[in-house]
Length: 363
Image 1: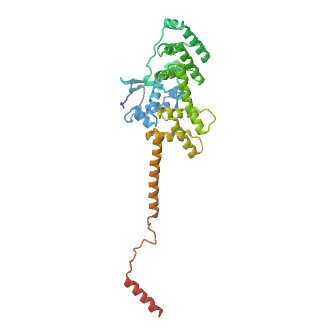
Image 2: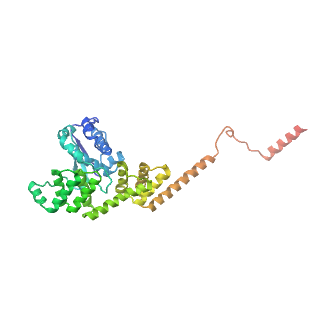
Image 3: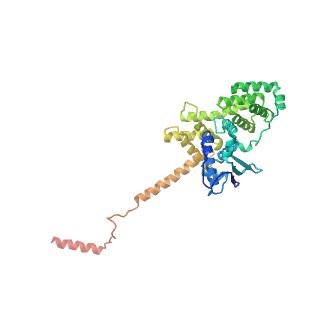
């Protein structure tokens, strides 16, 4: 894991949280993203150990993927810039003077409205490291040429209906990018917008993130997209069934499920087993408790039910050894006021002398 060098503008030798950050950026940010930014402020203030993605993840009890996602989020909001090597690993973080970023308030407001890279109820994993730094910007002539295509015209008309508003220039740029560079068909573009809007997501950044993930996974037709999304929704149905819930998972619950599937890579039967154990032990559908179970299995590299059975056997054996040690400790002779004195040993002659004395007394 590469060591990351840190550079900052306008940061003093103490940890200061600018009011601009609290007022303008923190309210709309995911809590884990805020933790990453605050930790960076602390590191810039000094006395921080060697900084790597791994060390930050360990410090904040998060995954490396979550840390990368958080850094990309703040980069998009112009609060920091990232430098990457030829392998696209982050090698430097430059924390931008937040007061300077304030001068771009209108731009930041648009970005904030568009950014929603949190884990959600769809089968996407936002691979920010593979996302192009800049997307091609189409000229007015190119836009006019492409929008004369009947297929694109129809797709644009349907997208307007889904968004419930006229298309903005950034909408046109994204649609043309999907068609020209990602080679999405008009049908796939329409389904992409239909799907995202059905989840309450209309911002361009979110839609582009879903599209990039589909492209990476080889989803190039509407049929494949429908199959992928229905498969992922099945994960939620399985958890609901295991927990006996008759409602859709909430946002935090969806994040947990997505973590179990995407980060841990667990199959449905393992997730169901963890849910069942949670109900048996807590008598309620506790997502946090289930997450601890699955995290333990993940750290112990359990990838199948056979691995989990083996872990159970090892735990049971260790518990029995502990119980035997407790029993041994309990039956071990203890010292008290009745046996603190040295004990005498009597010979046959001692008993004979004692018997003679008792008989003389009787006479």
